[in-house]
Image (cartoon, rainbow, N blue to C red; front, side):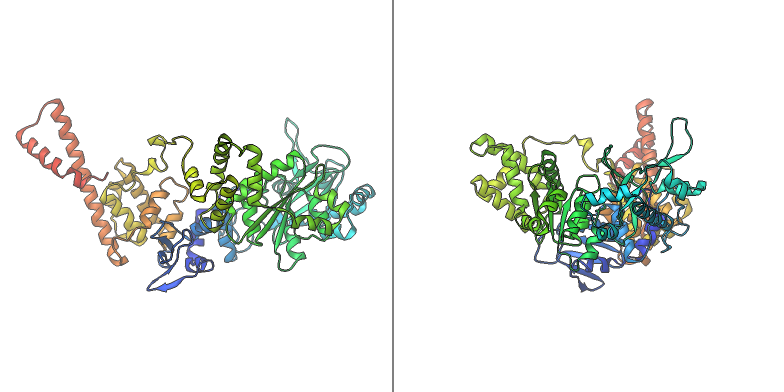
Length: 600
């Protein structure tokens, strides 16, 4: 979804969220005093080292170091990108996620208002889908085309398939009478504004069979249009809008969930017509990507519903290439309990044509013979490397290494390594040794090391203490005087600048928990270091004592800065004109205490 999610909404979402409830729905937690513990879900262990704090709204594993907020857990455990994790968490509390800067859509005045501020777009797309459906009934030519493609009236109605007339302004005439309505049509991706000196708009879809794309709640969010007769492009999709991101949506998923109780399998194909014909033939678990390669987001969505996915691709060169791309994308989602298989159709066949010729039962019989991911991976690499000699085996290992690295540690990875070792005629131990040997040294420049530009945050003990106190006890910010804060703001030092900004933020916008504070910094380079400090033991366990400790630490930090300034002045003077005996004694005293007092 386009548009930035307001920070105020993230604040409120974290305040409403219960991290114990979020994690507890996925990991069995046990009460341990004021906190909860479990065996870590991110690495194998027998003794619980994974702790969840309801007070801090924060989790931390003392074994592998995993840590974060409720949003961070969803991102790490469900492998969700940040925006989708926000959507997932917000959905639990009936909140619509607002987005700033969405063209044609008014930003929500109240970021936690459960009323969907995108409702006008949903309503517009619903009416347009009905308009296109009526257009199909009214066009003998379009109905003849749909019938010739084998679609029944029941299928046309179930998928609400319609027709966009062969005209430049048919939709505009019905839905774009005012400037505001035209902005809404543009925001929904239904019309295009003219450029090159011309004024006005024109319909995006013309003379096409129209396939409404629905979200999981059945709301129309976009369209796909298939050209009738000749023309390019053959398929035209809605652009990405506030409602629609093609890299996340699956066509037919809503219909699959309605058609089949207890959905067990999804058949992933490439086209609208493939999906519709498979449903019609009695395979109501077919879904399609929307003009893009299969993405990790598609797979995450699918695996929330089922444990088995079968990829089905055309039998031509493009289909084989698409299958290999899908395998590479699915590896990060592989784990025990999930079954992934591949079905490549005969040459010059696609699911639409084949199911029309053979029927649903014959097609389903092909699915039972689909190739498991492990076998498909080995078979493909064998086409790239000859295993009859050492050179070919070395190339096989080189091709395999980046693929294996994508698979999370666990039972599936171990079983796959056993199968690969068998194909190579080697032991698992030997295979692991080969995989552990890099092809060439990969030493990154020191300046390019991850997080190198933020290491200065928290190097000095006083600076570390001050930032850690603020993270663990956000309310302690109120104990810092205005004069102390102003003095900090005047110091030119990267780490102190972070402390000053953090302090200013918490004084003007108090946070209710450590999690709230951290989420405000998630998109900042300092986030990594701050989250590390957040996962450490608090310097002061009780909030009532934290304010006093913070004020004292900052006062000592300011004293150290004054000493640093005086030390620098004496050193400069010694170089330029020499020092008096008194100044030499002062310099000696400052130098002896310098390393203990300086902030970095």
